[in-house]
Length: 180
Image (cartoon, rainbow, N blue to C red; front, side):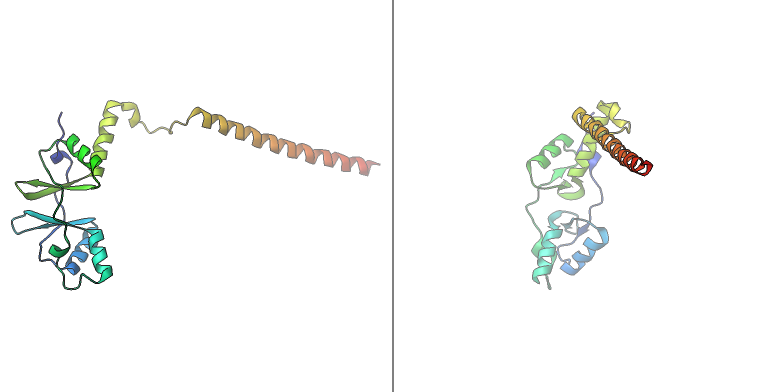
C-alpha cells in the first residue's frame, strides 16, 4: 500500500492575505496557536510563509509598525503535492532544516504536512510490522542495570542489618554493665 502526503496532511492550514497587517498576523498566531502562517492570494495560490520567529523579531525590533505580512514572509518555501509519496517527503524532512511543508495542488495551498505527521506514520507502520510493540509493558532494561539494581538492594539490606547488629551489640554491652 502506497502512502501519500494526502494521507498525512492537515487540510486546514491557517492562511492570511498579503495585505494582512502584522498586528492581525499576531492575533492569528495567538488565536490558532500555529508556528507559521501561510500567505495566499484571493484564489488560494501560495505566495509565502510567515514563521512565528520572523514576526517575533519584527515585533521586538519595532519594524512591524504599519508593516504587512508581505514584507516579512519568506517566498523560498519548499512545497510538495498531495500525490507525493510519503517516503519522499520523509527524506526531504531528513535532508532539510524545515519541519513543516505546505502542500499545493496546481499552485493552490491545500494543506500542510509536518515531520511529526511522518513520525506518527513510522510509529504506526512499526507497530504493524512488530505487533509486540503494541502491548503496554514495562520497558526492557539492559541486564547490567537489573544486576546493579539488585546489587544496590542487597547492599541496602546489608547496611540495615549491620546497623541493627551494631545497635544490638551496644544494648548488650549496656545490659551487661547494668547487670554488674
